[in-house]
Image (cartoon, rainbow, N blue to C red; front, top):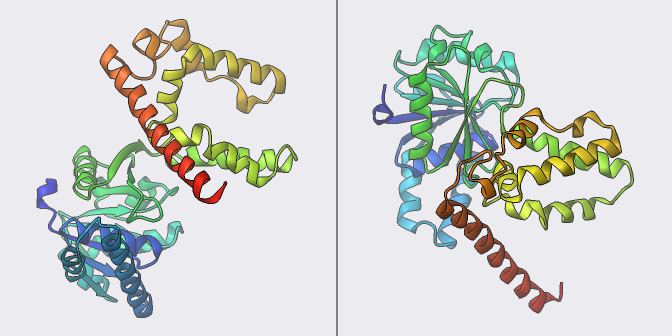
Length: 321
């Protein structure tokens, strides 16, 4: 199967995530079916999609004609068979309960054509476990979207033990056609985004519980420091620009002061420093750099920060923040 063979997409579950996913699929030109056992939930989902589309029109992202076309491509039904029988790609967005999802995958396995790929919007459950409920485990894949699905770019493509290379590639290519950003991850607890977010959120709560700072100051510290850079570069690239040796010294010192194992410097960081791979200044860290690419990375960062500085200056002038 190739991504070009995907013509019809079914989204199962009309909750917050399902309706957003369906909107994105229809916006990308796909014949899209949204299914839910609750007819009221379906009606509510379609009303919410209309609001979302109106917001895009208001902000000049799409035209009114394009919004109307998206609505025309979205179909709704309480029948799982009607939604899925002719689907080439099915995205499940049911509650995050393994047995509930397994039951649904068993039904989909019986209903859908043999060519169809079955994807789950799970953020934590085993793709291998879901695949075991079907006779096509090689065609079962994770496709984790982030809320709000119609606005957040990332879609994690999650691979189970028996998920085939073809299924992963078709899913990755489909994410690109949906104008989203794919990030591939092998099966593990929390996968990518949830695990990374958990590290930050749990640490913020511990700082609050220790009475070191209040909630407003903790959030302000993130928003106005490293958090401000994250939209333009990820944590590993930030380390590359700052210097792996500098981060190694800082983390070793933090661990020495606290004795807390969660701050123990990763062996990977220590090994790269030992090898002289210090980031931009040596041409290689977690990424490889040329003089042009390192200059471009810093330019993107600085331009992003300058844009924010202008916005902040405007806010100060308007509101005296």
